[in-house]
Length: 414
Image (tube, rainbow, N blue to C red; front, side, top):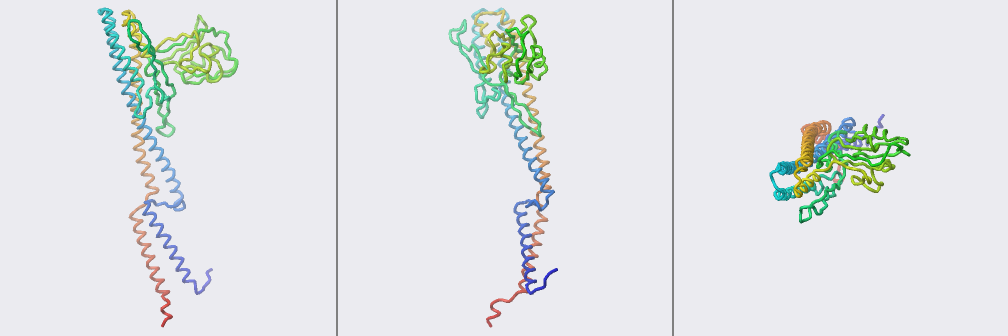
């Protein structure tokens, strides 16, 4: 029920004018922002969809960026690996030449000079850094020099030469999200890329009577393995073999000690994460020592890196040991080249997968953008038409109100 009064027409006119101004202002804001929804109450259902679409679009754009960044890293890494492969092929050619028995000791020493330069080039590639100054082959320890060289005197040479190359990085991998809960693994560990042989570790302590005194956790090649109180050496071997680590464990039939061997060419990392299981077995030193140079006293290690193989080849050339060159050295070189080819193929495959993910994310971003446009974008033609109609109605209302209330102060000044 409405109350009839002398102010009713004026109040209705003012109310309608305010309502028309509100609608006109809303139309102007829509055209200015190109967005149909200015407030959630304009279209609650569409607003809910729009928020989710925009959030998903942001994630898809980030996935594409992640994939492209990985592609750049894989491409750069592949270049250095390919150059290292060319170096190793040249080293093998020299090994075949030096093992044929034709050349004398002086000729072999001359070959050693070139091999030493190739060794330096190989170390240079292994210590390569990216455009942002991060070490390419140091795992996630990107601010450290991947490999450290130790100089020393070598028999047959009058100047100090590279005697040992030690890995300073780690074996931790980066998981980069390239789709919803889908990750690409970026494995930059140099002690896998630049390794020649499967590494074996032979314990020196009899473990037949060993039994875990408490619960503990050990890490084998980056994989954590839980040890329960009361476990014996055979339980430990079983747990290592059943884990996802690329390592096979066994009990030495003579010494009854723990033996570990990698299933492919890589440096083996072992350490006690919680407790002292490996320390009790004599495999590692105390927890203050970090892998890979934390092996216990008396532990024997077999299987070296590409650098160890090239160093052994150079030293054999300097000493004139053709028998070693044609046997052990040449075999290690072949295994090192095979591993480098395998790693190179893996890196190329990862690059292709990263490119596929980037392409898919780019197309998906277009599809999601279309969905966002459907829910939130303004029909510009319709909006301009509506605004003109609102403006026309507002002008008509003002004109009519002016005619209804045309009395002014001048009417009373006659």
